[in-house]
Length: 246
Length: 246
DNA sequence: CGGCTGGTTGATTGGTTTCAACAAGCGTGG
DNA sequence: CCACGCTTGTTGAAACCAATCAACCAGCCG
Image 1 (cartoon, rainbow over the protein chains, first blue to last red):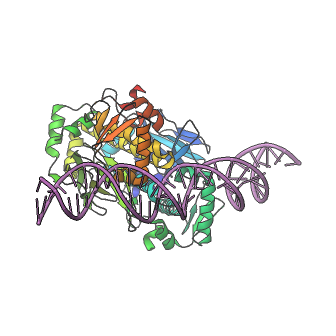
Image 2: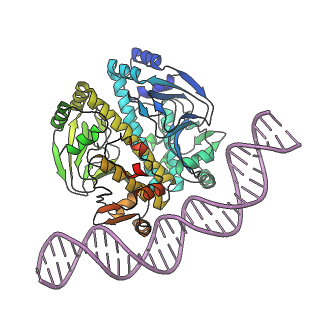
Image 3: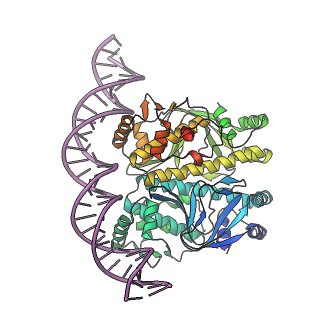
C-alpha cells in the first residue's frame, strides 16, 4: 500500500529499511474514498500532509459559474499539498479521480521523521522541487502549447511519472480519466479533446481505450509534445521513461 | 537591500533580530544584473538558492521555434527556486525583467540557518507553500480565465504581493513590465493584451502608465478577476491587500 | 428495459492570432 | 541640438483555432 510512496521517495534519496519502516508507521489514519469525492476542500485546516497511496486524484479550482480547472494530477506517492510540518489552510481542493486510498502524516510526525532521518528529509525536499517543476511545466502547456502538443505532453509526463513508481507496463500505462477530465486539465472542452485524441490516434502515436494508454512511438510523441523529461528530476535508472530514448 | 526578503519571510513567521542578522550574513555573493539578462538558465547546477533582493524577474521556458512562456513572476524577497539545502539542476530559466540585485544562500548555509532557527525554518517552509499556491492559481488563470479576467487577476495578485512587502503605495504599485511580457505571462499576444488593457481602462478599473499601475476600484477589479487573496497565505496585517476590502 | 455516463459528430459562433502598418517615447551619436 | 534608430505601444483586417450548441451513439447498471 505504501509501496508507491516509498518507491517515489526512493527516487530522490537512498532510503534505509528503517526509514521505510518509520515512514510506514507515520502514516496515521489510512482512508478510502470513492471516485469523484473530495479529499480536501478549499478552506480546510490541515494539521499534517495527506499522501495518495493508491489511485489518482487531482487538485482543482471551481468557480461559481461552473468553470473548473484541474491544476495538478496526483499519482500514488504524491502529497496532496507540499509536505511541511505546520498546520495550514487548504487553498485548492483535491478530489479523487478514481477510487483512492490516502493517509495523513501529522505535522509532528513529519517533523520527527525529517529530524531523525536525513535521507527522508532530503527525499521530501527534492520531491517538493520536482513537484514545483511539474507545476511550472503545466503552466507552459496551458500557456503556449497547442491542443495536440498539450495532450501529447500530458501523456508523456504521466507515463514517465508512472514508470518511475513502477506503474507503467512498457509503453503502456493506466489512464483512468474521462475526456471531460482531460479537458478540465488542459483548459479545453471535452469536445475538442475528443477531436485532438482522434488526431493523435490518426498519427499512429497512441491508443487510448478502456482506461489504458499505449504509446506506439514514444520518440515521436515526445518530439511532438516538446517533452524533455529533465524537469521531472528523475535520477537515471528510476524506471525507463518515455523520451529517454528519443 | 535584504529588507524585502526579511519583510517577506516575516509574514510567515516571527523572526528575531538574530534571525535577520544570520539571514543577512548568509547571503553570500550579492550580484547585480541588467534587465533582460538571465539569472539562471536551464541545466545550471546550483549549489544553493538565489533570492531576488530588488527588482523583478521571471521564470520562463523558451522553445526553439520562438514561443516562450513566463510561468512565474518573481518579486523582491522571492527565491528563484524552492529554497532547499541540496544541490540541484535548474529546469526552467530565470531572467531579470528589470535591473535586479540578487544573492545566493549556499546549500550549507541554508541548512545551518534552518537548523539553528525554527522561525526561519518555518518561514521558508510556509513560503514554499504560498509559492506553490500562487503557481496553482497561475494555472487556473491560464486554463480557465478569460483574457480580461487573467489580466485583472494578475494585477490583483501582484499588487497584493507587493503590498505585503511594503512596495505598494495605496492602490498604486510599480508595474515595470512591457505588454509583451504580459502576453508571454498570460499566454496571449501583446496585441491582444493591448486591447484587453484598453477594455480595463475603459471600465475605469485601472490606469497603467509609465510603468506604474493604479487600481481605481479594487473591489470591482477583484470581482471581475475572481480574485480571492486567501491563496497567498498572507496573515492579516501584512499590508493591506487589494481585495481584503471587496 | 430505461436511464445514465462517457464518447462522437456536425454546424455555427466568436475570441485570438496573425500580419501589417504606423505612432510615440527615448537614448545615442553626429 | 536635432536626427536617427530602436523599443514599445496602438490600430485594422483577415484567417483560424477552439468553444458552443445540439444531436446521437455505445456501454453499463439497476
